[in-house]
Amino acid sequence: MGRNDLRKTREALLLSKAELARKAGVSPLTIDRVEKGMNCRMETKRKVLFALGFDLSEKHKVFPDI
Image (cartoon, rainbow, N blue to C red):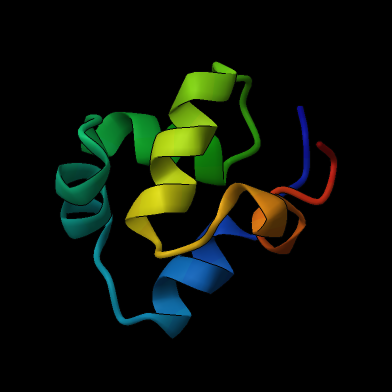
């Protein structure tokens, strides 16, 4: 399982899991799994980054392991 800062980033932006999931086009369960460090596809990480307002060049701010 990979470490990430998704929960911290999401909470700093005052977004609920459901709001982020809707913006990213994924399920709230997927957001929960990613926050827990479970594996997910690169496409899912890309969707989450864009939904948070980040560019791909800023991926290290949320997913430092990639």
